[in-house]
Amino acid sequence: MKIVSVVGTRPQLIKAAALQPALRARHDEVFVDTGQHWDESMAGSFFGELGLAKPDHSLGAGGGTHASQTAAMLIGLEPLLGAERPDAVLVYGDTNSTLAGALAAAKLGLRVAHVEAGLRSFDRRMPEELNRIVVDHLSSWRFAPTPTAVEHLRTEGITRGVSLVGDLMQDLAARVGAEVRDPAALSEIAARLGFPLTPGGYLFATVHRQENRERAAMAAWAGILAAAASPARPVVLALHPGTRAAMERAGVSCGPDVAIVEPQAYRTSLALQLHAAAVLTDSGGVQREAAWLRVPCLVLRASTEWAELVAASGGEMRLVGTEGRLAAAALEELAPATEAPARARSRAANLALAPSGAAEGILTALDREP
Ligand code: UD1
Image (cartoon, rainbow, N blue to C red; front, side):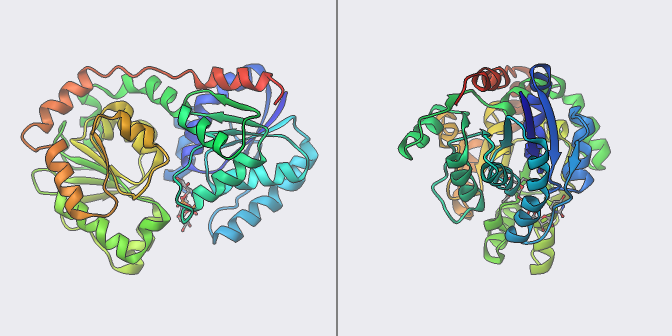
């Protein structure tokens, strides 16, 4: 088959890296980058690190409001897809690039294949939730990562073309986990960042959701990080450029023991999670990685589309939203300072992360007519 794959954001590059070698062994891929993320730290560096092919088309459609960004992508994609006339347009996840790829394809009568179909947070204030719903309904192939995702599609009347395939991000984490489990990996990162980091002796955080860029929410989560951080146990906050800009505009800061660093490379991010006392995040991807690595995780959101992971985590993953008291109590319980270093060392030493076989599952499902 001829398949046009559309990516644009950091998590899509990670998912594409887990699928591309297998996809290219069986099909002709035309690789399109919308440019939704364009910083070297958010996108450029991932091509080299993850061994991704150079895009055949780059649309440069980053920045702007949701409408102008999505519109720029649609305008770029329509003639491209019209000229390529692929057998399928493959989109990943729930971003504006996913929406634009699916909508442009469906309007041209092309079939859409959606990786990560069926996820729902049931919070329609999230732009990602709107993108998920629209894309699932426009798709012909729906690749669900979890049984709950299959169930959500059924509830919405979608049963055709649904395949339970597993999770591409889990497969990549399984491949790379072994490379970062040695505490020496953490020492190298500390040397690069310019401050000391020891196993279990720091917390790792990321924040980028739109709802967490509102002034009140920013003040609340910045307060959570400031309260969690101390000279003996700092927080390392790998900050999305959009969040950084919103903090600067609102004059919000996190205090002296929160080390704000650039977005990190994929392996660095996995290593920083694995060796941390705990992870605090509003990212869907980081939530999952923390769960697979078995690191205590505080989710800085009121809802999650990964409820299964929260349930399966045996209490190691907590939805705390921006509630300071909940966060402090959860940290005290899940990552007490006296025990966290020993737990982190044992976690890394015993890391056994199995792949889910998602790439093979997707290719097998693609062979079936939807
Ligand atoms: C997007 C996705 C989200 C995904 C996240 C991963 C949507 C609706 N949201 O959110 O689902 O989890 O990516 O990171 O598609 N910016 C830069 N440099 C960049 C990229 C962005 O400065 O390389 C700035 C933009 O100018 C903007 C802000 O960051 O001000 C937001 O970027 P945008 O791409 O709109 O969405 P994300 O918040 O990254």
